[in-house]
Length: 251
Image (cartoon, rainbow, N blue to C red; front, side, top):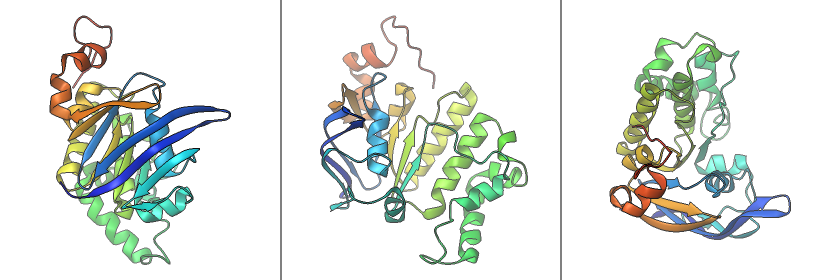
């Protein structure tokens, strides 16, 4: 495993007067996929928002390649290579699929190249995501939920990010679409992408991850390889729907 790309060091963060994160320690290495799992309200999505700059930490440090990014705006962090794909649908529904993809490179002119560079990169990404090429002229809002998520992932690649933050990429999708999304996540990982993933579908999230981290009450309580956590009976009982639990996990 390569060196550490992202480090959260004793991070606290929250909304209004209340903290959600209470001293989070977490490290993600270059080329690694780490999946955060845990109950609702554990702080998983808050971790992603704190890393991407949508939420400023109240304490601790967020380091990217050893450099603090706590004081940087979301745009500045994006330029440093942190791309956040939120849980909510984020495409512009009235715009075409192709124009949505191009929007992912809107900060390229003046920093890394011009419009020609943006279009060349879009052509490369479209080869990897067939839905972009097949539906490029269609309104993004006409796509299914799974197809929209594929376009969101494609758009996040426009800046060739060092770190991708994926918040519940499978939420609200039917089983076939969920399977396609997880296949895409694994494909990105196999291509060398570094990914920090939040996923309620814990079984599928851990299955595509190198490591998992279990959060509870705003803290990381347990970490381990995805394989070891899948095999841990404590994790299975609490988070994987084993032992007659009510939560159902589908791969």
